[in-house]
Every structure is written in C-alpha cells, then in structure tokens.
Amino acid sequence: MKNNFAVEKDELQPYKLIFRKYSNSLSGFAKKHGLNIEKYYHQGPSWDFLFRHPLGGYCWIEIVASDDGFRAVGNWSYDDISDEIYYSKRTDFIECGTDKKLIIGKLEEIFTLILAWTKKDLELIAQKRTDITSGMTVTEYQESIERQYPMPIP
Image (tube, rainbow, N blue to C red):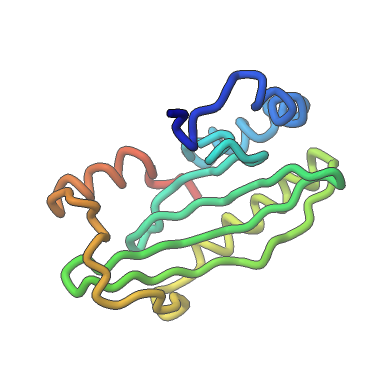
C-alpha cells in the first residue's frame, strides 16, 4: 500500500524547476533571519519558512508557486498546553509576482508583520484540544518545536 505522502522523485520535478530560479534568493532570506526551510510540504508547490514567535508558539511563511507567479501567507500558531487551547493568526495571501526583489520584499513584510503581532491578535481556534502534544510529554513537545522552529533574527 502506498503512503499518501510518499512521492516518486519525478512528481516533485515540476516544482523543483519552478523554484530553481528563485532558490538562492529564497535561501538567502531564510539565512538572513535564521529560518528553517521546509520544501514541498505534502508534496505541494510551496516552501515554508519556519521560526518561533518571540512571545511563544511557532510561525511559518508559506510561499506558493502558481502559473501567475508566487503568493505568500504568514501564520502564527500558539498552543496553551495547560488549558488545552489552540490559537492561531494568519495573513491573507499576498500576490508576490515573479520578480525576485518583489518576492523577497513581500516575504520581509510578512515576517515583520508576524513578529509585531501580540497575543491579543491571536484567534481562538479550539478548546479542550487534547491532541496538542500528539502523545509527547510537554517537554518533548517543546523540544520538538525548538528543533524545527528556530528563534529568528529580526
């Protein structure tokens, strides 16, 4: 039985061709701010830039390739583990076009906006969410977030 997320190498090739032209600029953005990159999440035409929010929780900026260029969206998720409450905040999708400087400029805008958000900006998504830590201890969960989502360089 094939795993739903297992992918043949050839299936990602069209996305790799799209991102190849922009990979140096996108990687430079990530390096400048100390972000991790997750490429082709769920085998989609996107890269995610991962980081922690200074007030807690984890963030990502997703840049998605389409026929018309790129668009991006920013997200901040915050888990209140002790009360089993999940909060989140996201931007609208922003059109970025195909110009490298414009794309990086839009990513910078989203990054700056996310870092400026406060806990008052978060929206309640779920209460009594018992699956927040996915079976891990609180310490294991926090360590996994710290590994995957680095503290950014503003």
